[in-house]
Image (cartoon, rainbow, N blue to C red; front, top):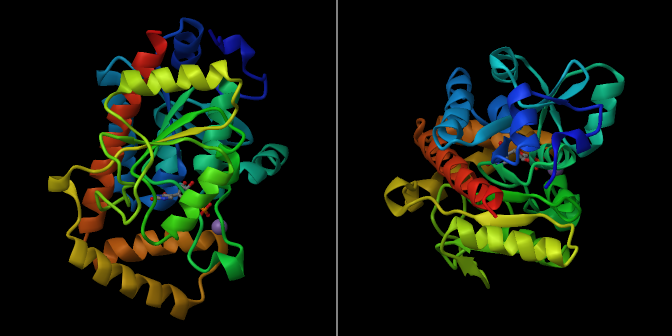
Length: 308
Ligand code: PSU
Ligand code: MN
């Protein structure tokens, strides 16, 4: 059993996270970039509070992760949650962590940076909205999220609604295969595409419930594997975005991004913001629904893991 005392001294665990880990109780990591860059203000602040509440209602301790004033924080207090929602924080991936720490700066952590810090703290389960992946045109631009290379070397189970169709989903799945990262559909054998329940891509493996995910995690450990595990949790059909409107809005958002010359790490936040505007808020509602669903599923996996 991992205990809080195994966390490096450079991390600051909240009291509730430290005691939950020390006592072997379930903990779920939550990322902060989805709050700072992925959801519009002021709805993002309510969402951050809500994602934590969903876990607490299940008896699971939430660990929202960010770097504040140079300190990697594993579990935020109310002031920390307010800061990730209201301040203009840097978007921080793994490579940015030592820079933020060395300069006593603050940043909101991506899936990659959150997974890295959570794993250092001894947390095994993480809930997000959508994973980063291989961007369209990556064969020219080399734009591939460090979320993938980090999951290749970070033993954490990430619950997501797949990746957005703004990415190259086929290439993203190929990359996860190359990195030997297991991808498991929860109650589905089709990889979801974030706002939509399905994509054009099928999965080799699916599981029915959280206990089966915990069994896979145990076997992964028994083999000495150090990769992450991706659990793909599709949004229920009644909550998904209308596929025709989805296709229309995405095409328009791409055209605007190209016209604006957006590149690099600004691409994902630009597209997300533009899509919320063009959809009149509909994409935001779907985004919130799927993130809530993912938190609930991650809570059940963490509980099944803690019960082993
Ligand atoms: N996908 C979403 N919402 C998000 C992100 C991805 O649906 O907010 C964020 C996550 O923090 C993810 C990051 O880790 O974008 C990936 O950015 P990049 O492609 O620059 O690595
Ligand atoms: Mn990128």
